[in-house]
Length: 238
Image 1 (cartoon, rainbow, N blue to C red):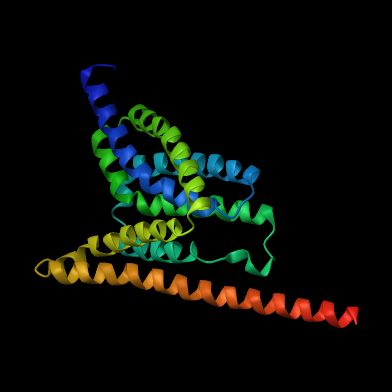
Image 2: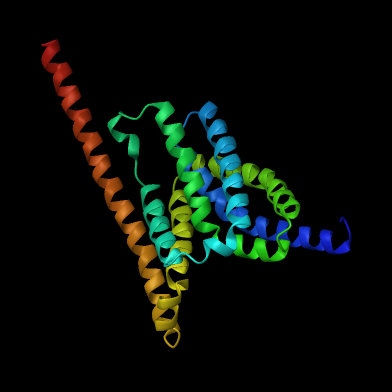
């Protein structure tokens, strides 16, 4: 069982996961950025753990999964929404409790991991040759990379908030790639690679612009609430 072929396949799966883990670390970091330190650790651990379980199941069922019509198109559209939603200041109204935020972060991590990992699921399934032990070992080895990477990115985002937009752009680009990998769409743009590239860039730009615009609107709402609060305090004081 543990022959040279087994270890070469395991090495290939680990390499695939390392490449994927970079994008996943970005997702985890962005999804957890609004949580307290305590809940961040919980979200990272639970989100990574559940994402790995889902990916193992999806890899085992890869041959059936990839028969779903328009899978890449749907996955890409979901990822576009996630990349936009991660730019929003969801708690600007102060209505989101920490427990709900934790669940939201975990859910975002798992969904984004599945959407971004479709290509890798197929690659891992091929490299493993249906060997469940190989699939699980390869994914388990990638867990520390995802956890360490996400914590590193979180610290960077605390110092440099603009990194959030880079992370969102990475997700939006992955989403655009998925959309154009859909067979019908890929066939249509086969002879127009330049146009495909332009449209991908436009998708990323649209996500960032929409997120920036909504962020500015949220800032204005906060400033207006702060002004009204100060006026109320002054009025009550007088």
